[in-house]
Length: 445
Image (cartoon, rainbow, N blue to C red):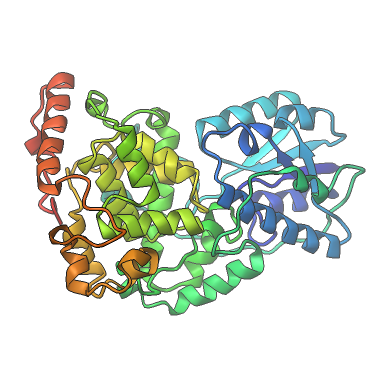
C-alpha cells in the first residue's frame, strides 16, 4: 500500500506521531508538503520571518530524506485538490486545531482516505473536556494534566518512497522571506534544546539575560516534538510552559469564537479608540517609553521578542493606548518567527483581560523596566538613541529631553485610569457586571 504523509507543523522525522504510524502501516510512504497560496501569499497574518524559518527547515528535511533515497515532494495548491489527483491509497496527517485546519482536513477526508493523529503533549484531546465542558482555568487544567504520563519519544523506520512530483525547487517561488536571529532546521533545534537544558531559568524575566529557552519556533514548526522537549529538560517551569501551549491550543479548538472575538463575550462591547497614529508609533518603537520601544524594535529587527517585553508591549497597546487587542495580535502575527495562531491569541487575550484569566492587570512600563532591566542593558541594545545616557535618565526619561528620542506620547497614569472606565462601560453594556470582579492584586505591577 502506497500512502502519503503531509508535513505541516511537524517538520521532523523523529517522534512524528502520524508519520511513524504511516511508516508502520504502509509499504511505502511519500513525503509531501503542500504550499497553499492562501497561507504563503494572500494572507494578512503572514510573517516573513516565519516563512524564512520554515523554508530553511524544509530544505534540511529534504536533505535527510534524500539520504534515505527519497525526497520532499512540494506541491503548490489547495490540499484537497492536490491529494485528490495523487495515486495514493491513504493520506496521513497530524491534527491541527484552528478552524481553518479543521475545515481543511474535513475537505481532504471527502476526496481521500484520511488518517489523522493527535500530536499534543497529552492525548487524547478529549481529556480537556471535563463534565461536558472544556477547561477554562489554566491552574485547574495544569493540576489535572500533570498527573497524566507524557509518553517517551518514538523512533521511525525508513520505508520512504518517491513519485514524479516537484521537489523543494518550488520553494523558490515563496516571496517576502526574512531570516532572523533563530535559524531553522533540526540541527539548530537540537542545539537549542541542549542549550535549554543548561539555561538559568531564574533569569527568564530579564530580557538582557540568556534566561529563556528560545525553543518556541522549533515547537511551532514541529522541528522538535513537544515530548522531546518535555523529556529533554528537567526544569518544571520550562515544562509548565508546554502545558500552557496545549492549553491555548485546545481553548481555541473548543472555543473557535476566540479568533476575532473576546473569549469573555462581555468584553466585546469595549469602545476602543484605535488611534492609527499611536498604533504606528507603537509598532515602530517610537512611544517615548524605552522598554516598550526596545521590545518593538527587537521584534521588527529579528522576528523575536522576549516574553517579558511581549507582555509589556501588548499591555501598553491595549491598556494605555486603548487600541483593540486584535490590532496587536495581527501585528505580532506578521512579525513573529514563532507565530502560532492559538498561542498568540491566548497571550493577547490574557494581557487584554478578555481571555480565560479573569484578572484585570496592567504592566506599568516604568516599574517593569526598573525591575527587569535595572541597568538598561536591553534598552541600550535596541534603542541606540539612549546608549550613552545614564541609567537614571533612561528610567526617568519623562523628566528629560534627549535629542533624537521622543517624549512619552501619553501620560501612563491617566490612560490606565481611562482604561478601567472603558472596561467598566463594556461590562455595564454587555452584562451589567462591575469591573471590581476583574481587578487583579497585580494591577500596575
